[in-house]
Length: 449
Ligand code: PHE
Image (cartoon, rainbow, N blue to C red):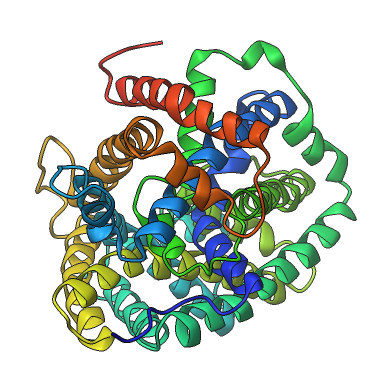
C-alpha cells in the first residue's frame, strides 16, 4: 500500500490549520461582535470559550483523524466498526460542501474588489456610488460567477498537487503573507488620530452588555472560527505525523486565530473612527464601509489592494480546507486519483455556487423554507449540521471511544500531563455537549434566552 500523505513539518501543520481557521469570520464578524457586545468583556468570554470548548474539541477531531489514518467519512468506520458513528463524517462532508456553496461566492466578491482596486476604480467613486457598485455587482448574473470559476481553478491547482506539495506549501507561503499585511495595516492604523477611540470601542469592557445570548453567540463564533465540527480537523489530523503534539497544536492554532481576530479589530476600528465612518458587520463592512474609508486615506490604492489581498488569502486557505474534506473522502473511498476527485467535488461546488450567486439576481424569488439558496446553504450548514456534528463528536470521543486510545493519541511522543488530559476530557464529556445543545436550541429558535 502506498504511504499516506502527511504534512512534512510542524510549521506546515500550523500554517495549514491556522489557514483553515482564519477566514472571513475573523475579519468581518468577530471585530464587530466584540465591539457591539461589551468590548473587553466580550473578549474575555470569547477567549474562555476558545480555551474551554474550542481546544478540547479540536483535540478530539485531531485524535480521531490521526488514530484512524483515513478521511473523515471512513475514520469512524475504522474506529467504531459496525456502528452508526461514521455519520459524523458524512455530516462533515455534507456541511463543508454546502458551506463552500456560499463561501466561494463571497470569496469571489473579494477577488472582484482586488481587481477593482488594481484598476484604480474603487477609490474614485462617491459614497453612493460605492454602495451601488456593490449592489450592482452582486446582482449581476455573470460577473460574480467568473470570479467563482477563477477561484475554483486556483483551488484546483493547489489541492490537486497533494497534501505536502499543494496544501502545505501554499499555506507556508500564504499565512506569513497574511500576518505581514495585517501587521503593516495595524501599524498604520495605530498612528491615525482616531486610534484611541477605535481601540476603546474594541477593548473597553462593558460587562452590562453580557447576557446569555451574548455568551451563546461567542460560543457559536468560536466553533465557526476554529472550523470545528465539519470533519476538517479530522481530515487534517490524519495528515499529522506521530510527533505532532495535539493539545499544543490546538492551543497554538487557537491563539493565532484569536490574535488575527483581535488584530483585525485593531486594524479596522481606528481607521473607521479616524475617518468618521461607523463600522458595520457582514459583507457591507468590507465591500462598502472600508472602500469608503480607503478612498480618504493617503495612497488609497495601496491600502485597498493590501486589504483585499489579505481577505482573499484568508478566504482561500479556508476554502482549501473545506474542499479537502470531501476530496480526501471520494479519492480514497472510490480509489480515484486526487485530480479526478478534485474535479468531481469542484463540479458539485460549482453548481451550488451558481445557485447561491444567482440568489441575488434571477433566482432571488426562489425560496425554500422562506430562504434563498445563499441563505439556505449558510443556515443549514452552520446552524444545523455544524452543531449536530460537533455534538455527536463530543459524545463519541467523550463517552464511546476507549479512554486509553484517546489518551494515547494525545501523548504519542510526549506525555500529556494527567491534569491536562482530565480537563480536556471533562470538557468533551460534559461542557461541550451541553453548550452545543444550548447553541443549537437558541439559533433554531426552539429556546429563547
Ligand atoms: N473558520 C473560517 C472563518 O473564520 C471559516 C470556516 C468555517 C472555514 C468552517 C472552514 C470551515 O471564516
